[in-house]
Length: 166
Ligand code: HEC
Ligand code: HEC
Image (cartoon, rainbow, N blue to C red; front, side, top):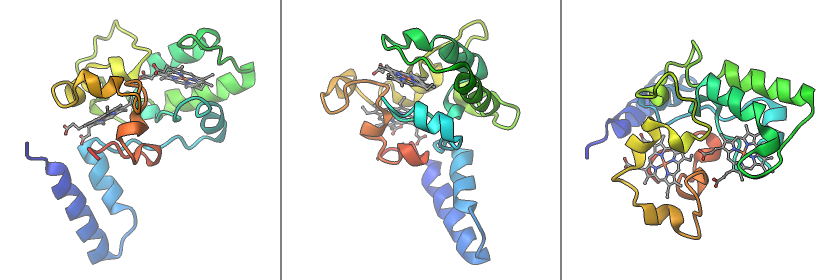
């Protein structure tokens, strides 16, 4: 399948070189939807990367982050509870930068029923559009991957916010 992403990256780089400008390539990639700003809030980065990558806030809508943060005592079978202050700091950051935040307008929530609050990125219709048919179920079961939640196993740039096809 042809992918305009490469054109956008190329155009962004060319523009940056031509204008000796700052961060134009990232802007080009962001428009294509495979760049998600990595977690930039220190408490979130520290506390939410102990067991898996700190998922970028832009990968879930605000209501999902509220639900995840409201249930840390039973977090996918783990107790990930934090004190009230840290919980509030992290929740505020994730909600302010969520997929459906006013500044974001990403395609992540496209096709998601407004009455549904997914706890997993990998439960979003968008995530399935990007992976189903492209990545077989066996790839996720591969011991080197282990789970759909292990984004970094397949996306080498995930920690830097890049989820392109590596
Ligand atoms: C004690 C370990 C632990 C900590 C700390 C932790 N998590 Fe998790 N988290 C998990 C486990 C286990 C899963 C399920 C992973 C799987 O299905 O492979 C998970 C899954 C998730 C998912 C769903 C990913 C998906 O799409 O399937 C989100 C979102 C998430 N965590 C957010 C957070 C946030 C936000 C924090 C910080 C407040 C956090 N986690 C801290 C253990 C942890
Ligand atoms: C088993 C490997 C694997 C895992 C695990 C995985 N992905 Fe992917 N993902 C892929 C592949 C392969 C593609 C490219 C499909 C294609 O070419 O269209 C892709 C595509 C994407 C895209 C679209 C990229 C683009 O170029 O538009 C995004 C965004 C994405 N994945 C995010 C994630 C996130 C977030 C997670 C973790 C919650 C994740 N992926 C987990 C393999 C994986």
